[in-house]
Image 1 (cartoon, rainbow, N blue to C red):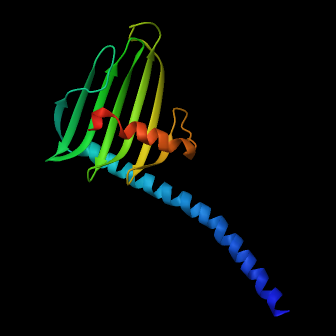
Image 2 (image 1 turned 30 degrees about the vertical axis):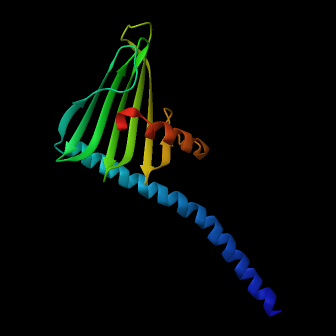
Image 3 (image 1 turned 135 degrees about the vertical axis):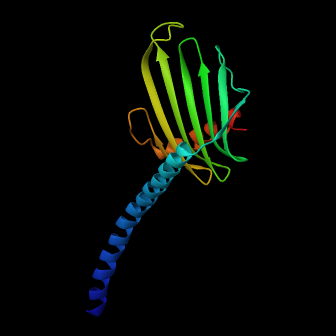
Length: 162
């Protein structure tokens, strides 16, 4: 009879820990995202030295890239690439030499070279230790994690970050 008494609490404990283990993992990502957002605000409030660098990505209408430094430490990179049917603006934030956050806005024109924006797409990418931990798409929805590795590689391979 004692065996059955102990089996019941252990079963409930296992279910409890398993269910909370999942929420703890989600909570840790939420905590990391909160810290990244704090660092983003800090970087944007700092007085940074702005340096224009050569745009390395291809674009039909050209591009501009700027690096922002606190002393000798890279804190931010901005890019703007123009095209016939729109433009792409990127902001890349760094802490301790590692990519922390990326904000990219794609703006689409109504017609060829009009400059009149008819649609915008914003994507936010949160990184921790070189890994994409959250991707928020243009609808404000968190993207499926199965897409993260490919997207992280695409971002980290961007020539403007090198």
